[in-house]
Length: 259
Image (tube, rainbow, N blue to C red; front, side):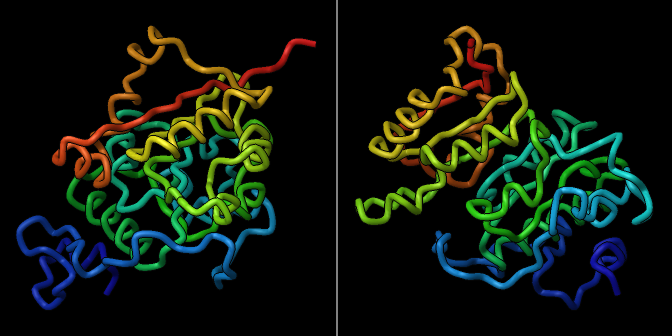
């Protein structure tokens, strides 16, 4: 029996599904807070962006594997999406925009996948534009996205990797920003937030020193409805808020440098 059928029929035998909400129970999908992005993991990776299976991720928009994704492509990427809080909020805010979460931890990825399927069953016609994939974004961004495909990328509360020898594992770095700049179209936005001041300074410095990114003004930040979700939509952000902690944002636009 498929997950959608179990949820719709109120399957009482699955302890991973809440009887009241029909949503997956997070405690059954707990994993280590972070994974080593430099280690080898075994999961399928598309050969190129043309091999991403849109019909698997977005069956409402692509009812068969023969449906060409040329007219509609993924535009938002939440890198290290965690339990999917931001994705769920964005799904209804931008219902016609395809978005995907990229998560390295297998149990967490499975939770997000089942959460999305449960929300689709409970809310017919909604959450069809959101999906998740288990992958290592530090290695495989070019396998998923073409040049200038994305309009938004998110890096929310990434692993700080405090030790200097581990800074090469940070998901924001001068080298990786080259890859992100390739995938983000001119005018697209990269959003970062952390509760670790040193990491916040690092990410902001990397973006400031990159020739293809420019910081949003205070007025632009105030006008962007997505900025407000950075600290409220995720489990990590809610935890920081409950504990009265600070957050450090760096939001930059992809630009075309003047010659």
